[in-house]
Length: 263
Image 1 (cartoon, rainbow, N blue to C red):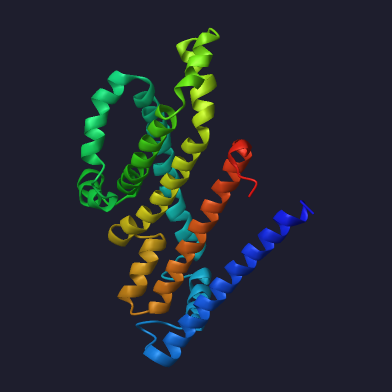
Image 2: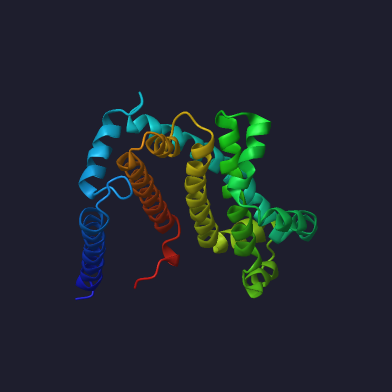
């Protein structure tokens, strides 16, 4: 009975998800065909499917896999830099007060700047090639990595650290064997949020400076008055973003099974 409960709940959740998507597609078709009746303003689902088939086979000399590979390579490079710098910095700020005193005010000043605002400077500093886009991606993912890693360590129960200290653990062991493992779910959640930020920002960067990628594909569709190509590119972005988030959630469950609710 207990084994069937979670399975039935997952089936119901999946059914709701399928019904939600089906309802959205039906409403989309109704609006595109019977209300707006203008395929340039809102292409019907069938036209977008044709657009997906076209870009899969090749659009403007490059296939969908080529555009996807271009976007993913930029995202992963910028994301890796942000995690490698941001997570340790956030932990250091929470654990070492002088680091927080020195870095905290600067981070608070830079935090409100939206990542796309860095694009013009990135073009001036790095040109329109990959380094500029990697820089913008790293900026977009850096802030959530720092802030949430800081919270993961600073909000640990003081009695937990005190117990480790009482048992003779050194300051280093308190950090690496108590604070970081206890804060790992929050740190992983920060990394997942940062990945979503990076994926959203690469599209903005490619809309401005790119010769390939999914953002470039959307812009090319706009310039060629092919709204079905634009919509196909947007759907590709949504599907890949959903898949990355789902994959990261699976990694989180593997690494921190104690933090997953039984429902």
